[in-house]
Image 1 (cartoon, helix red, strand yellow):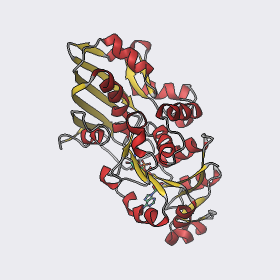
Image 2 (cartoon, rainbow, N blue to C red; image 1 turned 30 degrees about the vertical axis):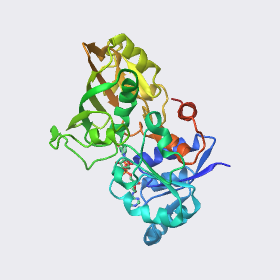
Image 3 (tube, rainbow, N blue to C red; image 1 turned 120 degrees about the horizontal axis):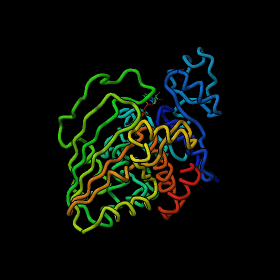
Image 4 (spheres, rainbow, N blue to C red; image 1 turned 90 degrees about the horizontal axis):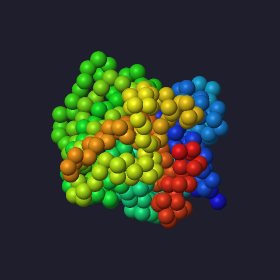
Amino acid sequence: MKVKVGINGYGTIGKRVATAVNQQDDMEIIGVTKTRPTYEAQLAIQMGYPLYVPADKVDDFKAAGLDIAGTVDDLISKADIIVDCTPGKVSGEYKEAYVKAGVKAIWQGGEDHSLTGISFNAAANYKESWGAQFSRVVSCNTTGLLRTLYPIDKNFKIKNGYVSLIRRSADPNDSKAGPINAIEPVVKIPTHHGPDVQSVLPWISIQTMAVKVPTTLMHIHTVVLELEKETTTEEIIKLLKETPRVKLVKAKDGVKSTAQIMDLAREIGRTRGDMFEIVVWEDGIKVVGNTLYYYQAVNQESDVIPENIDCIRSMCKLEEDPAKSIAKTNKAMGI
Ligand code: NAD
């Protein structure tokens, strides 16, 4: 029997998780929620997803001519697990309903670690969410950092990490957020990204700074790592080539910016033009003495999607071996 998954919040992350769940053979979407009868609600119905709405919004959806399957509480009562993709700092509101229904739930990186006490990354700590009622898939930036920091730490032990994050200011479908003609530093240091990495790998010493720039496509990280074990540029390239969900590209092949990475994703036929992998510039990797330098790019809308699938598998005890779950998810999603 397939695990029954409900999506609370069919937005940027929710719709992508829905597609990815239905690509797996051990889980299925039984419904999604929307709070307003927007084009996304219409599309959810066109996609064949039963649509559930807040009890006090039923009339709005009916007036807009949309067929609904029931209320959000109805979906919560039918699901084995809810993937909560409501906006950050909203979804904590639903915790009580999930507790009451005895349903499992996954939150996203917009929520604090303290909401669940467990944060998830498939390679780094799959087993911590094993059988758990609640977990949280860390944010797009933290997922990006963990994808490369975890294997590097495992092999060469990170003594200190210094990361600058150049963050996209809005998602492509967002016309409200900014800046649109400025560069904005996040003056609280460290930014939340370092402590968020430590919610999964508590022993890593890492400092993070961030600036927001007027782009919607991807984030870029500049990473500087002091390593305890000696290594070479070639060894790091080999390691990252072998790491699942990490993709190496070369500026000398014409992949000079996030624009070409997004073009690459479209050209290889990815749904919605998504790049689920963390993209590292191979010709931007350099080891000098005991210090490693590299650049990586994160497609904020999509890198956390395969992690949500593996988190469902761990929480619902579908596959004990993290590597097998990662491989199964990747195969089904064409990664
Ligand atoms: P979004 O705004 O695109 O989608 C949120 C969805 O929740 C919308 O469908 C909206 O209708 C619905 N919603 C709004 N208020 C609600 C409420 N009170 N109750 C129920 N549903 C409500 O947001 P998103 O970008 O998909 O972000 C969702 C979560 O994923 C956040 O925690 C965010 O921090 C995290 N996240 C976002 C990104 C990203 O770049 N977009 C990346 C990684 C993680």
